[in-house]
Image (cartoon, rainbow over all chains, first blue to last red; front, side):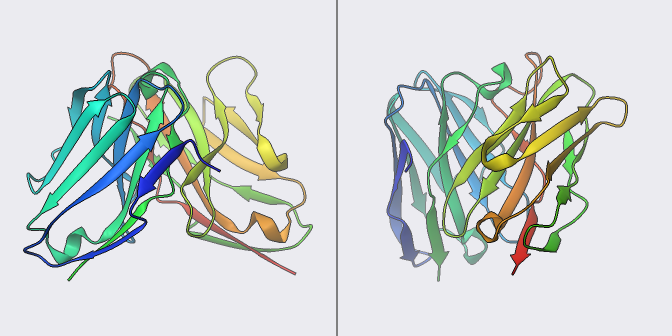
Length: 115
Length: 116
């Protein structure tokens, strides 16, 4: 069981499509994250939100657009993606930022395939 | 900047054997240390973490890790593994305040395969 829920679990999209990944945390946390997990690279932090404000953008291409309407919800809007963007996208949350030593709790991920 | 090295990409062991998964890190500032586990088709779950105090940290499922500051290592151990421990294990570090806010830097992972 997880306090962080991601939908959809699987998504196949064409390079010209627009889609969104959704994340909801039920833990009362203040910080939320998007990570990318691909086969050939370590887990990569993409975005960090703290109290709904973006605190970090780890040089992510603009074809990925995050949105955090409140502390419980986080979206990742996708448009004109490339095949190399195919990966597992993990949402996570923590009570406060990880730099405080807080545990980060992960969702089960959304598997994205770009065709 | 910080980096994490997990020397072994795959570790096969037999059931009930002991296992050690190695993790070394590099950082110019003090860090917190974590081990996460990822079972097939699931997200990551925290096994244990080191913040301060005793260098031997006990986690869930019988795992423990020892922080060695001089060797900048945080190796994960279990004295007797089960088939259910088959998973991928990730070592991660997070810098204290003053470093990259909110960033958890991961190693590439070690796939533990437990055979009967």
